[in-house]
Length: 428
Image 1 (cartoon, rainbow, N blue to C red):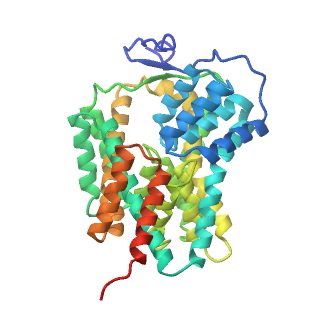
Image 2 (image 1 turned 90 degrees about the vertical axis):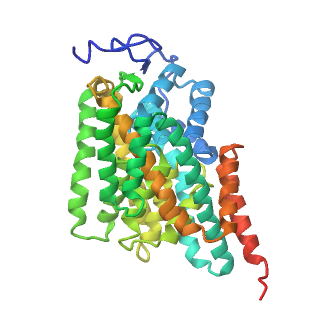
Image 3 (image 1 turned 60 degrees about the vertical axis):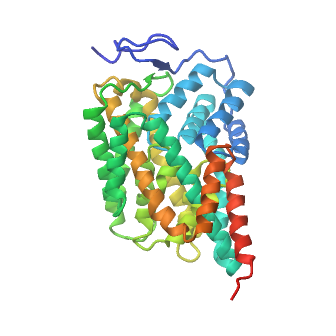
């Protein structure tokens, strides 16, 4: 049976394979084509105000683009979200990029990505530039508070992802196996090996898993989709080869961030172990600098991937921080955007290939294990050194998980608690 024969029937029906179908409907409100400037203004406003991570971002998008501006209808929006959740990369940025394309073509897509990304990217860059200028015990206390923020946020991400992506024994076993591989010795190669074994585990253990069946939307030519996929694969192979000529230059930096963006399933938090293992052991930055930036990123609106601007600037030689920040930022987003372009036309066909859904389920489970291992090392090991640190981190976790406190509140809590402890006179 061909891919065309297997197309899902109706916006909320079931396809001929019996799977629940999510269709990217083209029955959208009749609107005149928008402009790139209009798209940029709308996405920039979201970039300034969208706190709370990718799930919250998708809620903001639905309100702004579907209910308020009516740039697309609810069924098409749901289809875009379902498709992007099956791809590596930052889901909310991919969805915003495709909405921009839907509204104003390729310029609209770029404008939507730039508007949503720039506010937090500029703040992260400023943090990287200003932090080395401010030294002393008080700044050390602030940085330590940011490390404790990372503990609380990553712990909550692991807990939430485990409940969603590992709801049965098979996927729990895959996650635990991936965590065991990385718990005491972690490297980029071992992380990729864990994801590969997760794919094999999913293929053999998760045959009954059913993910959404996505039918492609009319809009991106199939040839362009194949070109985007070819460019994605070409850069994945070419950048590491070119980086050999300058192991600590801009191309090497681009290779690190491109590879991280290409293999991240599950959102921005999962990029932590991939980037840390690529940057810290090779001397690009220190562990404390890395985790301080990660903690600061929790208080930013917009996508968490903008930590790349901080890491690029913090890794840069003198007078090159702006260029390196831009290289890192573009490199980490580019693979996800290329896959979103390809996925818009190709994913619906690929999902009908036998075993694809099981493989994706296994990869997602292995991602939970990778992030769980990163929660212990480096996050916990680098940040927690006393019972007081444990109490602060646990309080932040409980506030996030039980009372749904916004991440920026956890940043303030951990930083203020750390500063207060530092200001208390110590008894001799």
